Image (cartoon, rainbow, N blue to C red; front, top):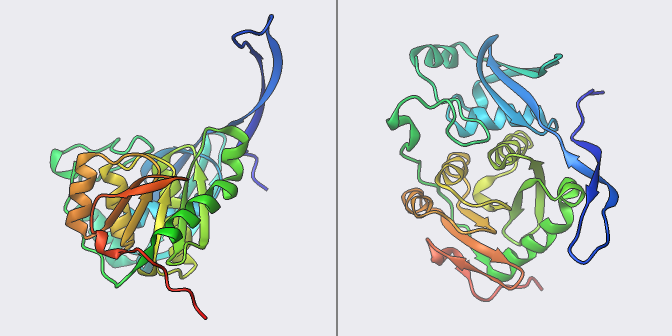
Length: 273
């Protein structure tokens, strides 16, 4: 059993307008733990993350940052240390050779681009997604409504991001949470692909803003559609166009906006008999 906890309760003195004095409260708060990712014993990056699903986080980071494909990961070892959690991934010989050639690697953390040392590493070309996904507007709304009820840590703390894997009908197949939006998506990618889920047959739902690196991670994973509750950046839209991704944003209970590839959106759903 891990000694690192995702939630910690702390007392506080709460003051409100119109309230006489202060009120003693206890608030459930998210915790952050240093998660080191290494490859065959060689340190690569340290992420500050919620200490849950750390193995999936490391695998998803490896895939979405294009360090190595899933087929190149021979094993994963998780070790708890005083300073945090160390995750070591054992790679195939070919993958180790590729890493050895890359003398300067992009080691991104929850901030998005920490560790990037060259401009050309910051905004890289993204692969185009494939597949004939079609999603009804009600399926998008269905996934949004379901995600709100599935955010267990988010309900407790009001300080967590979530990423969800939805099928074409809007059914949520997997949900992952983290204090970092990039970490939540990496956990989802790592967990979903290891479970054998097909990204081309569904879409990803994000509770965070949609910046370009979130589009890049989704494209590398193979999602043809992203649904985000906040507005995208202009660069995120350009990268979604480049990747042939349908980008749906400003997705709330009362509707959503489609910024790219609207042809994947079906106005009237076909209900099975």
